[in-house]
Image 1 (tube, rainbow, N blue to C red):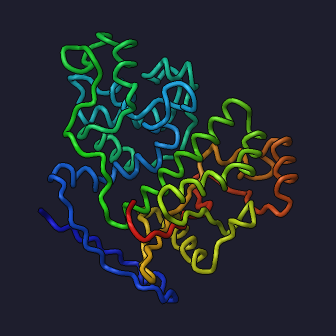
Image 2: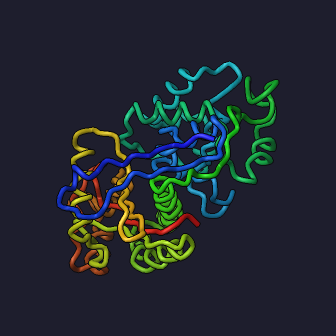
Amino acid sequence: MKKIVVLLVVGLAFTSCKKNVSVYEVVSDNSKDETMASSHPGKTLMETQCYICHSPSAPEMEGRIGPPMVAIKAHYIGEQTTKEEFSKDLWDFLNNPTKDKAKLRGAVDRFGVMPYQPYKKEDIDKIAEYLFDYEIEEPEWFEEHFKKHHEGEGEGRGKHGKGYRNQGKKVSSNHPRGPENIGLMYAVETKKVLGKNLMGTIQKEGTVEAMKFCNEKAYPLTDSMANHFDAKIKRVSDKPRNPSNKASADELEKIEFFKNAVANNQDIKPIVERFRGEKNFYYPILTNSMCLQCHGKSSDIKPDVLASITSLYPDDVAMGYDVNQVRGIWSISFKKHK
């Protein structure tokens, strides 16, 4: 059994904060492969950047807005595919997504070509490495679905050209129990629920209806996830749309810290502080091209969407963003893992 020591050095960044930033010792029973997989940077990047559209937990038909990540792995990795080839193919598509480049033709017909996002190549390389080296979580329905639609097609689809490929080292799907990872899990799972409903509404009913969804459902859904995890879960901003999402003075410091990290192209890591028996977790919410439909420059937002924003949020200050900017942060407090 190995002891994994997680040192969160954030005290120097927030000298005005009097909360105790601690050293956490996490004891893990996982095997070496499980530990390596759980701590692999590609895993965290995949969960935070990909799962909003490619979640393994969404059902096959209703509520899904993109194929699960295991489907991408199955279509891109054949028996003769090298890790370098897989990483290159994934980056070539994401750097300029088009229908001609897509290998998941059925998914494109159903969901459309994914919008361009300004990903970093080094991040995609890490995600590709994780996907290639390890088995990943897959929906219960996926194996039967893939075999039904793709059994035996193409060279290298799993062993002997049949089935689907989710090969690699088997690892547990359990999250490590360090506070950094627990907080990130709470944020990712809540983001999945909000993202699935929001993106589904945009696809089916348009952006104006999605605005109404945010106004009416975002808080209840977030609260339900907070109750589920026995935690306090908030999304706060220095430029809130809803006044209830206004960041506190302490949270504003965290927002500025993450803004500087993004501006300087630094790796983004959660902040975890311990105060009076609680763990306080902070992680940035970054904008992408989809966000700009409601949070971009007012001149670029469609008139009917802008009218809806003005009607629902007369004091709104949450516009003017570009892609890959800090829109706000997750602010989560919890005492123990559930």
